[in-house]
Image (cartoon, rainbow, N blue to C red; front, side, top):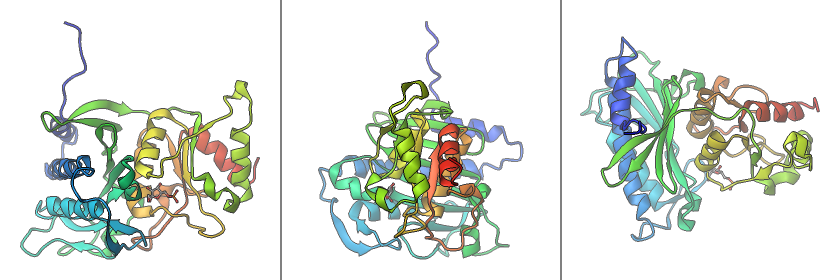
Length: 336
Ligand code: P6P
């Protein structure tokens, strides 16, 4: 019989990874397990969104000024409720909530911190375009008891794990704990995430750029020159690049991870810090891209080195293949 790919569930993989850390207590594995349960519950609603009247808006506006869609609210509550009783978290923070989210009094406070964007790209829900959930896990830094804001405002390089669930043509759980990036595809018939992409490595160079060129006229000159450069017709140097952009960071970043190239949401004259959130979107995605061998910068420095000062602060972001991000950086810094 031909040696097919090993039938490894996310559950089993998490526990195998745990054994690689002699000091592991199993807390971390249980956290990731609970997240995978939340992911399946969100998937169940996302996958039938067109059938059940949970499309449309709640009429609320979230901390980032975005209109909150019903599915957003469902995903936010589902993740919180799946994680709050674990006893492993001292505090959570969600992109949908202005302030940090305390663990209910009746549950034990633990040594980890969870930040999450429950449903990234929700403006695409009604058009059935790929959306996703994003998460970051940190160790607490406050001494004990209830978690604090300082636990949630850590540099991205302090993440002990990060990842996302992408609800697309299939549902894939992608994560890293610092030992490479791995993808697990949901098999709905058995309700298990099964290993589909072990050790994802991003290509050194791609042929796709992914940014909202509708903002081109507001971008700084260096970025405009970069776009002009990569869209010139020069076959020997692999140009012109193709533009692919769906307006869901999880989808655009996942395609960049799998195919290579560059994704960016730059700052511009109107919004110097861009639109994407440092803590909920850029840090986890930067962690994944770097773990896969790519780069993630804000135009001046590593995203993971930025010290957050506010939960919902925005940052410009340029992430993807090393050669593509390096070249873009040269144009941004006026070296080309
Ligand atoms: P624009 C979705 O609302 C989101 O936060 C990211 O997922 C996505 O990359 C970006 O905004 C899209 O923004 O301005 O291009 O519509």
